[in-house]
Image 1 (spheres, rainbow, N blue to C red):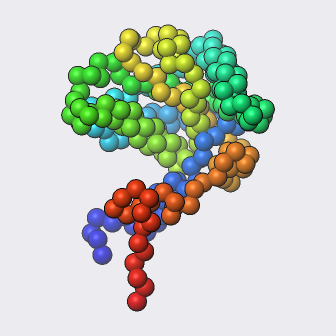
Image 2: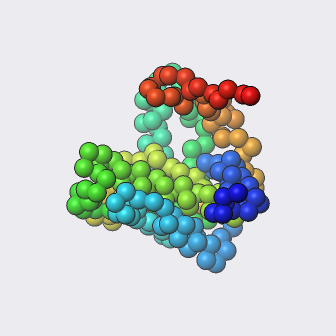
Image 3: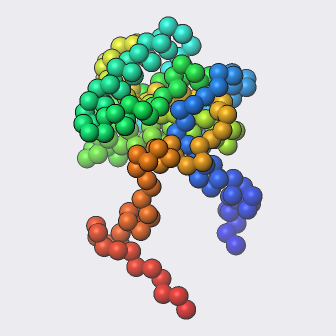
Length: 222
């Protein structure tokens, strides 16, 4: 037995949070418990980052006026997205894509400015700052799910517009609007799967062996 292994109940809890995490769009406005949002952000800040650069920055939106401006901008981008989808535009417009006005908390997540100074692990792949920040968001998401709180990631915005609305410095990069709050129920499956927009791929279609497209060889059963 591996001495570093968690207790079985703890292991099950980790996998349950991963399995039951959902991108939520429907929220109730009840406030979070005191300290709860801080715990989620601390979990995010524990994420791995390339070169230990910790590129994530979080802006808590407490201004009702700013929240409404974010919502209006996202709605504008939603219409542009629908136009770009062509024949699926009407289907897309029937989907609920955000909960900015109804959730308890809104966070804007951005990449810090002056990121070009960090070359450790980024010389040939500068996008690893985004990968690192995505890990932070996933940490927050899983911590929230474990505490029964929903999170929705909104990405329909113009980064330059959002940067201006949130007073972010030149060179920074907004990557997410996170809606965080209580929910009546978590979706039994991803919402876009329920709405038949798409479905999760089978694992065997995404895992190859030795080269792209080579089907993974399963171990021979004795």
